[in-house]
Length: 212
Image (cartoon, rainbow, N blue to C red):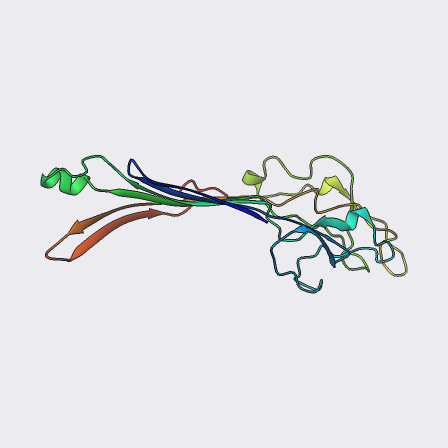
């Protein structure tokens, strides 16, 4: 993984911190990691990070060479605090009520995780064939339907064992789930009361842009 940080301190009342993470890992046959991926993997069983193999008789099968399940390639997180200069430091009721407000934010942006599309079969982890075309609906944010099933063709199965007669060519490197983006905002002001007593008013909004 690669990580980078950047910060801005006291720039006209603005403090900001950014953190970026690049993660990349590949698995082959559930046990061979190629690349640099900072994670706890497990033993290839249920819930592990491996994209489990379809054909143990072909250790070099290209379709089983794929990103780790749960891998987020790009992630950006950050915080922001801004001292609003409007009427700041002004005396009197007007400055005391409208001045000295602080705007803060926490934001998070990340790309989607690899998707392993499977089909029902007598062999666990069987995958269909990808037949071309767009695997993701363009209007999925409105319809909440993400994958287009017409982009896949089921691999034929044996009439006796119900197992697929060959591995499917769908690879989780071909399609990823939706990314996530979220911005939380807070507007706050602290009022001084008697002595050291203070009271703070806060207006908070989570996922302020209502992103899906």
